[in-house]
Image (cartoon, rainbow, N blue to C red; front, side):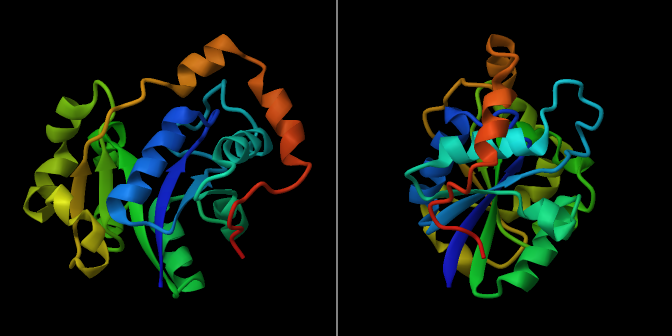
Length: 210
């Protein structure tokens, strides 16, 4: 069974913060790979005027994932799923030979209760939350965390996640990277033009998803 971490997001654009937390998760959780699920559209960010087209965001993610155990993919677009709960059901059906764990930053835990069927997500796969600067207090005070408290596992048990009964959540801490996609867009408003062209030239996946 392959042990796969799933990191969903807009990747608008992908940056070294995404890469760093993914590689940290590989070590902390004993993962074979992390799949970046580049969303065709984030329901919580619909209508964002600075959201680049999917090919540009995918190209950005593949460039950032090169030479690592990270696989950037548009599989959600190919599966036709819009919400994480539906994506997880489809992935488990399509890849029964894999064990999946959902990865998220502390900022997402702070708003996790707004995700559709968030309790269903928690009962489908384990969840690993990775520290992000400025969001820890919000995450710990969130409605979702109040529900999760009795299901929290110790970080030193992280590599045993495939044996956990669900729901299960582990809080991981590492030296955070302050990089943000918002700052990168402000610094280079035309970043998506380069990555959009690159995405059409072929896949960069280190371990392509079938």
